[in-house]
Image (cartoon, rainbow over all chains, first blue to last red; front, side, top):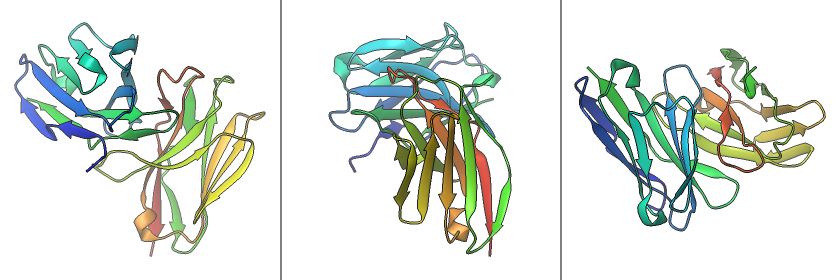
Length: 111
Length: 111
């Protein structure tokens, strides 16, 4: 499979725990985006990497959220001290030029 | 004002009819526009991209762009029940550091 891969697909965690999600972009795609989507809403931008550099970060993103893309390949998104409001689908997309392709997403449920 | 606006629907059309989905955007610097299809519980799938004023056809899908009016539309001809999904309009700013998404239009195609 040469598409964008996200792991895990589902995550249930207790409030206050830390969680980490992984995204493997399409090979050679230098642009990588993280989004969050809640029911009935469009994807909400979180952060953007070009190669290993994090070039854009949403002002809506609290300091509990951090993302990395070491060596410009896979990326991780960590949420510390999870809250119930963090429950959402977390989507990763990658792009080589203009068109962006999404992975299957990680559905997070905070209980 | 949101960067990309869509009517949330639902839009209901009978099988075989033409479905017309509309989107407006606010950033005049945006040059590329995208339509994604999202089935319930799944991630968005890129189905059309358009960069120039006018129409672009791909099978049963036609995307239309009017930059002067800041308006993008998607026509689905011969609608099928399998087209029932939420359609998301997306527009990146010129630097492609993010994609702005509308909230999506839910389409129901009735057999």
